[in-house]
Length: 529
Image (cartoon, rainbow, N blue to C red; front, side):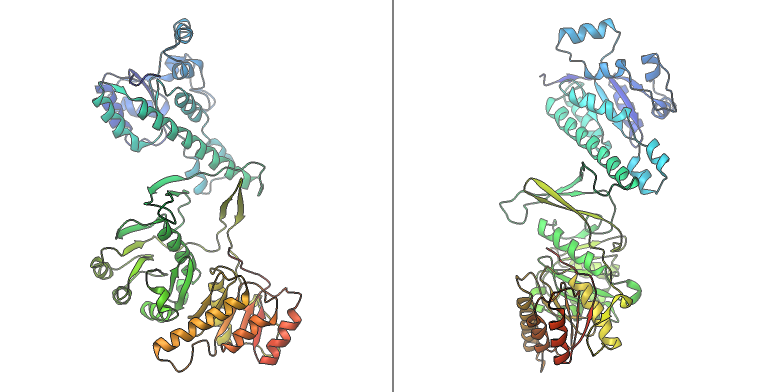
């Protein structure tokens, strides 16, 4: 396999014409013969450059509305022929096939067409056939052919041609070939995923996944683990699409926790007022609403001031100056919000390690999304938990019914519990969490831990009693026994929201009645593992 490969002839056929003319001019100046098709050929010709139409080379016109134009032996022979095999060279001479040393192709905008909500037939017509076929041919023959599928590679290729007297190196061609195969794989993934949905196949026999590299992580969850960050192209507002205004590079754990924080705070509609979520190790340590963003932050912070140190803060509205001043009073890793005022940015600028991310909005927590989790030898695929429970969905099961104010806190607690690792117990009072128990092996332990945290905060704040007194409590799944419920009652909870569905529901309901607690069932659980 040769290292340096000459570039004498290039085929350029692109849907995205960004940088096309500059590239074509640069190649022409280096004496490269240009071949092209359709709109690309016209654009190059209109720029005053000499270019041959592929139809002139193949002897066949473009036909069938452009479906057939490059699917021809003269094209694929020019891409696939090995220059070091006599039989291949002889076949080229016999059939008048000229070598194509570079292929520049980007594909029909299928993903963009789907994103615009185009109908089935329009999406079908935007499935590229000739492009992927040529890309695969050129990539296979990367020993001799340079294949280019990304606009961002144009400059590097020209620099290499200058450095190597009109040749490309094997290392570059190998890298570009891998990128090319990844691009066609991602393209086919987009097509197959769309088609599965379009024809109602929610569990297709074969499924593929793809992503686009965004950045290298310094390390993964721990320093001995290698990691990188890839985007999925959906454009969902969040950490993948956010603009980072300051601070050092995000770590693997930062990204994971920031995503958890922003998805949680998005549960609270901006129309209902400001909301703040503080996350530590993917679990909320404080969530609250307020009349102002500053009030919401202070109330969230007071749930667990200890855990908030070094945490992630997510806001459901743009960061303002007063809230920024409060946030910088303690060490905070990341703040993410749908915008930030100039005054807030100026305050953060003094904290060089504090990352500020802004997005173009909040994620739609009700939008259907597919999630993936790798296991040994396979992949678990499921719909994202977009389950929603409103006031009309609740069933009062105790003799005592919750008051309107209690119902508000119960629904608030339920939204938070959805984002707490199971087993989850969440105490809420006046639209603010006052105790969170997460990730325990028993529901009783989660209730105990949450109550203990509330006691510790009351002592630290000089309060006469924990804020769990008079609180609402949410359990992400049913109480299998009455002990967890009674622990919540002992902590001062006066009302409970839980899915119901246990064999011992009657026993739990009776215990609630005896304790004078109001309880509602949702009929839906929110396990989060």
